[in-house]
Amino acid sequence: MAWIVKNSATMKIDRREQPWLDDALKAELEANVLPSYPTKQAATLPVLHAVQHKHNWIPLQAIEEVADFLGLSHAQVMDTATFYEDFWLKPKGKYLIMVCQSITCELMGQVGLLERIKAKLGIDVGQTTQDGRFTLMAAECLGSCDTAPVALVNEKLYESITATNFERILDDLE
Amino acid sequence: MPLAEPILCKRIPTPPWGDPRDRALVTLDQYLETDGYQALRQAVKTDPKDVIDLVKASELRGRGGAGFPAGMKWSFLPPEDGDRRYLAINCDEAEPGTFKDRMIVDFDPHILLEGIAICMHACRLDTAYIYIRGEYHAQAKTLQHAVAEAYKYSVFGKDSILGQINGRDPQCYVHRGAGAYICGEETALLESLEGKRGWPRIKPPFPAVEGAFARPTIINNVETLAMVGPIVLKGADWFKSMGTQRPEGAPPTVPASFGPKLYGVSGHVNRPGVYEDELGITLSELIENHCGGMRNGKKFKAAIPGGISMGILGTDQYDAKLDFDIGKAYGCLGLGTAGVIVMDEDTDIVAATRNIVRFFAHESCGQCTPCREGTAWMYKLLTRIENGGGTTNDLDLLLELAGSMGSMPGTTICGLADGANWAVRTILNKFRGDFEKRVRKQRYVSLPVAATR
Ligand SMILES: Cc1cc2nc3c(=O)[nH]c(=O)nc-3n(C[C@H](O)[C@H](O)[C@H](O)COP(=O)(O)O)c2cc1C
Ligand code: SF4
Ligand code: FES
Image 1: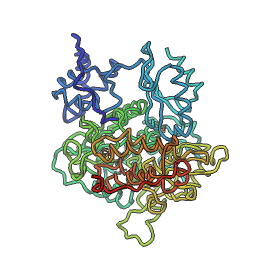
Image 2 (image 1 turned 90 degrees about the vertical axis):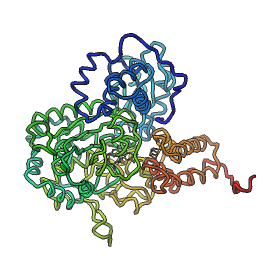
Image 3 (image 1 turned 45 degrees about the horizontal axis):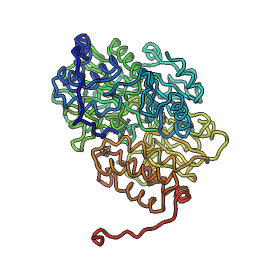
Image 4 (image 1 turned 180 degrees about the vertical axis):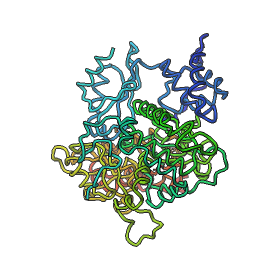
């Protein structure tokens, strides 16, 4: 729910010396991303993607760094970052499991599947396992309804899954 | 009559012409060997205005949901002023039940890039952004690679086949979204492209006049643009030999449903998948001829014709004609994306409705109160009904809530709320019995507000 307001009043920014958006990443973005757009603000999504790709999430300090890099106010980048559910403003597990919960996947048995995955991992939707390996999320239609039910694990899509073969897939991930 | 030959599926093995298991990415070389980029070469020799006129004459309608005539959209652009003009390609494909654009990008990305280049030539657009949803990781990589190939082949960039447009080398970029269905709405897409939250804009101004970065912008769906190349090669009459005519007695300004269409079928059928056929085939033909019939020999109960925003077809509408006039003829919103979701006799319609409404409640961008609050309340009501706690009053309340939201009643900025509105109203109207079985009879007499003081 994009419109759920974040708890900004009590939000604390954990700071560290070392920047999240470091010079190497900046140089790469300056060479390959910024020239694609007529404004710097338009690079917000690709830059946030790049930060998340590198660190697996987007700390608040990184949002400030992105804003400074793009010549925007911190609030502008915060505004954008909080809207999109792909951007993780808190740490997530090494593997992000997104089980499609939309109509075709539900028609094809997703509910029982999700229950089995929850039981196997011992977590609810929205949680991360204690060892930090798995985060479980329910996703909306992943555009693969013909092979429902489906789930994304990080960038890889698994199709026509059953509880048993998906459990095996999870076991095989290091 | 089935299509004589595959058109968008020319290079993508699809029944009855080929086996989907043989599908593989068509490389630039393979594309070129099969007439690839011939349409572009022909188009650049043609005056841009004539290309627009050709697309207008073909009556090609948008394949992204609304069915707006593409040629007409292109002619809304103001005259060139030497400054930048944009093309935004809508590959956000997040409407549940829809996966046709993914097939094009997965296997034949150059047919899309060729359509993009032709559109840039016709409309004098110098920069194209392909907006692809964040979850399409593999597809974004495939596209990136194909775009790089196209640059090498001089479709875009320096010394492009297109020449310079608005004094610039034509460019094409892939822009990834980040998990928001609403960014498929065209003005939300532009906001997102500009690096902001995906909040739909109030229109007018329409994007053709003031779109991305406040400059003239054309937005088209992937399938719409992929269709442009074949039209340039084979002509408007060829295109119009497929599909269905405008409704009887309608003036020529009413667009007809010409051409082939990709149908993505999912749910309770034997062979779900993307199929290509003429507009106007019936649902029963699609299920029986292409999809091998209903799964496990079950009976048909309902189908969603084109993504969940379009409402539902009832049990007695198994022979509905799938074209752009489906809305008026069968009491739903429209053909949408032609992502057909089939449900058999064992389907719990109440649960399906709850699922659909949860989607809208989750994906509402929150700008308009009737949409943000209305979808959330409908979800609560439907959950209550599904769990046995509902009453007949809840059904009336659902209808009232649904009917109050949308750009057509005029209470919201964009069409997401219309989707929720039509889904709920058509399902409740066509399957009222399924809901009544689940609720307790109860009627309150509601007091007018003034009398409750
Ligand atoms: C809530 C909402 C979501 C939409 N999602 C998509 C989408 O994912 N892909 C798409 O092509 N069009 C989508 N559309 C339709 C676009 O706004 C627009 O009409 C379309 O991209 C225009 O292209 P076309 O004329 O080629 O169909 C959506 C519309 C709404 C209201
Ligand atoms: S109708 Fe809904 S999704 Fe569309 S702008 Fe309004 S709140 Fe956002
Ligand atoms: S409904 Fe799950 S992929 Fe479309």
